[in-house]
Image (cartoon, rainbow, N blue to C red; front, side, top):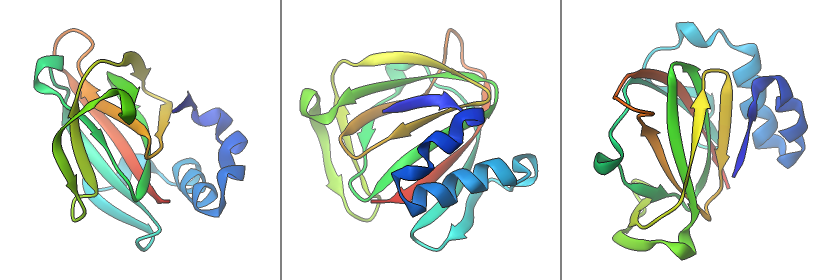
Length: 149
């Protein structure tokens, strides 16, 4: 897991050409004009999902992990908590679904506050619990860039 602000995105371009495309998109696009849902960057290699909605109470959230994509979750408005834990430390509650590129888990991890202007990178080994309310559910807008492994 990596957590940082978009001001430092150039530090992570060397993770590979797909990451460079993802960070270029986040830095060079007027993100406020993107429609909700999927937005193309480079076909199935790199694409963005715009999520605009309420955060959840922790009791209503689940751990997830993906095998085929890294997530870059960039909060543009609001603030949420995101949890992270190594998937080896979590228990599978829903087996991996290739169509959804996701498995669900239960367990314990570390929660970090993620304010607007901050991104978090989750790799396949990173179980993560996004969109968790800090105290009470509030609206958050974020861009989740999917970067093919």
